[in-house]
Amino acid sequence: MNHYVYVGSRTSRERNAHGNGIEVYQTNYSTGQWTHIQTVDGLENPSYLCMDKTRNYLYAVHGDKTSASAFSIDHNNGKLQLLNTVEIHGQNPVYLLPDKTNTYILIACLGTENIVAVNRNADGTLGEVAYNYHLPGAEEGKNSCPHQIFYDKEEKYLIVSAKGGRDITTGAKHGINVFTFSPENGFTDVYKLGGRNLDECRHVAIHPNNRFVYQVNERRNVVLSCLLDNETGKLTPFQTSQTLPDNCADPKLILASGIDITKDGKYLYVSNRGHDSIALYRVDPLSGKLQPAGFVPTMGDFPRFLGLDPESRFLYVANERSDTIVQFEVNSDGSLTYTDNTIETGSPVCILFAEF
Image 1 (spheres, rainbow, N blue to C red):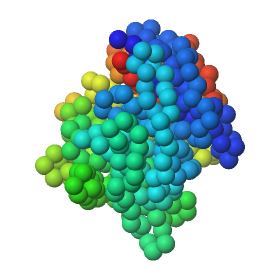
Image 2 (image 1 turned 135 degrees about the horizontal axis):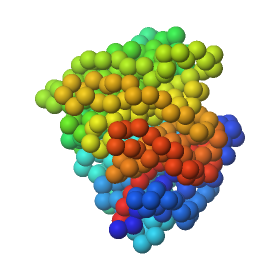
Image 3 (image 1 turned 60 degrees about the horizontal axis):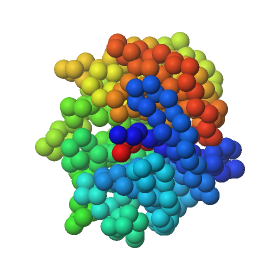
């Protein structure tokens, strides 16, 4: 079994970016060492990435644009080959994943307040947009802008985190939206929650037990912990936790960003852009409540993304503005130790692990 890492990046001048495209690495989960094997260039802002359920194909959205691309994956060496690029009827796509049936790629489009389902063809290419759902705004002329579309562990519900428009005086109508999706009916609205709208709901992490959902809100830097009702899709908040130290009085703009939970559900991590830190939490196995466990510097500037490897042995932080991915070892108590392994890569914003 070979292990690979795919890194999405920003490439455009408008973003002051230094990325070259999608970077491909071979890695060893035991040692955590990465070896660069390919740059897929000629792509504009191939930011967020996903694979289909067969792991034969990789998909990328093009940040700030209106398109998504499909790639075949060579299982012998992990390398990518571009198949096609399609328009998706949405601007600034920011997250994507395959639906439960593996016949659609579901995409959240931040700039046009919509989520779309794009047909995925048998040869891995992307087809036409089959479903297009617009999230209503809190006021006329205001938008609710989805920042993530994410399945629960059973792939029964889709949780869509939404922000307000660029004018943050008005938040999203509903910060957390729960849908079901089917090829026959498309997106079906199941439940909506305020989600502290002006906090700007961003991403979620879901506990392995599928009961606890942790929503990170990028403004005001909080994690909203919720209980998921598997029968109805209802989310019931039970705790809010700040992601910054009590003594933080930094005048810069500080935005929470990435969130992930260990495979055993014991520890949760959140990155803070501007403060350039990782917040650590212990998770109570019975109540799901978070107990703050400290803060660690990200060793770089503007950590847009963080993620654990599939074994939760290492945590990786993508520091977008310092062009680095920094590796931390996850200790038995959930604390983090910098491993002296820093991968230099232009404007990283997403890390995707795979094994073939």
